[in-house]
Length: 283
Ligand code: CNA
Image (tube, rainbow, N blue to C red; front, side, top):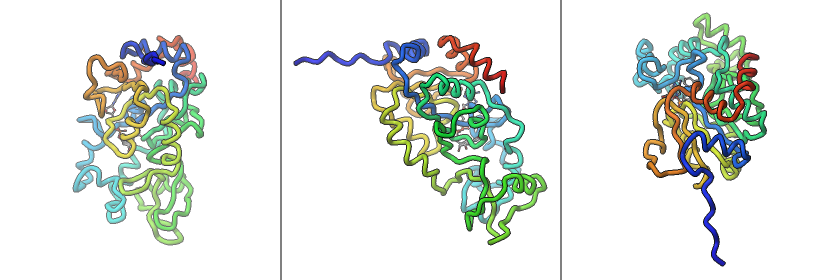
């Protein structure tokens, strides 16, 4: 028998249509992929934004190339630049942003399947996103260990060393101590590998927020949802596959500009604004 073509989840590639789909229950298994751009409003610089990004301010460390500061082999030879940077980035007085709270709200509404974040600042945890719904794909400052014997070390001890400009070494084996953030040349956490396949099979809507999609394998997740699943980019600039979206494409939605303003706008369309404000107020 002839089959009627399945209607597309979005009739137009607009944020209004996305909001409609969340409201009417079309989208209830939402994955949110995030990057450094969502924490800029908290006062933490991203990597690549010209002028303000960390990569552009690394000259003082005299690195052979900017990424070297996060390369495990370079770190083993010359750890000082990383510790100097860690001191600058240390997550202590930063507060979650509207975007973090919005992701938490998606969880409260029961529609968040998972938040895959590249950020290491632990602001997702601070915003109250449940650990089960969170994949910190590049690790975090939350735990600390020796890179040689893998012994876990007290984070406060590391903080004190870093702030006194001392090189923290393991008392057992003399190995360097570093936060469990994933360096280039290190494996991503096990959780990333075990969850991506089942998650992206089920996902019915993907948000991509505040990331340049330059770092792999994280960036490749954007191609993992099924081909009819809408993808929404909320970012300062077009990135990854969103750079080549065709006009009549009803799959990919682009909301360019500051993500905090865009997310607030989306919350308004969803009639969630006062709940979002409440979360922001609670900090
Ligand atoms: P990136 O490469 O610096 O890209 C950031 C993206 O966000 C760019 O496309 C920017 O245009 C965009 N952006 C910046 N500000 C805003 C804003 N206000 N609204 C919307 N978009 C904005 O950072 P990625 O996360 O893509 O790179 C991956 C690296 C960065 C990961 O390994 C992280 O660990 C690492 N990083 C993390 C933090 C953090 O934890 N806060 C900070 C800096 C770097």
